[in-house]
Length: 294
Image (cartoon, rainbow, N blue to C red; front, top):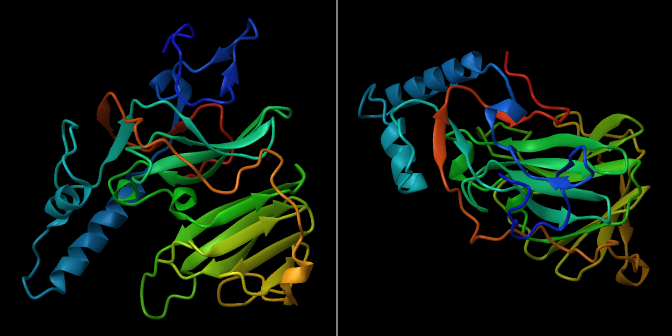
């Protein structure tokens, strides 16, 4: 996309060109995208789908294509079929949460605000763009990105020494101990997490607050809990912090995000102008921390 064309709802540049001007071109082009092999992932998904259908009363009938079509609606992408696919959406990135004047999260390569997409964290002072979560495959676009799926308040007052975000893991079986909504965070170079809700809970009445040293949570205006971000006490079954103290309402920190943001937001009117089926998952070329599927 030309740098001279105006872009909707962009309160921060994604990159700066050699002339010091904000640049948006090529965020979803092959020239600026890293491709990661996912043959093993496609194979695993195919086998799992076959096994599940074999256990059904209808026998070994592969129905993933029909199920995808019904769940995702009319997908104007050439090549949508009965197997696992990856998509490249020609859609501008959106800032879904701004922390301050140089730190923010973007949603990129998405079908719409409620269907798929990849979230990246940006710190323009440190020239950082880091993969957070999400994808644009035929499974990911059936639901919202984990960050966009959280509908409760999210208050971020931590310094740039802390990176915190929302993750969501669906329940895979009745013995699954790793499902749920978590606040994942990186501090002192290490990732940790705190479980905040069940895997299907949107969190409408829940407030999450991140400071430089603590994490606070409360629901429905009741007294809440506080976790020490530096704690090493975890639940063995899922690795989440389990040591917290009760916080009365009168002791709840009276702070706010520097930008004033309280929720993840996205403009539903922005949709892709073109959709392509591609052989592998793609990520922004300038991003770090991208997952490997080899």
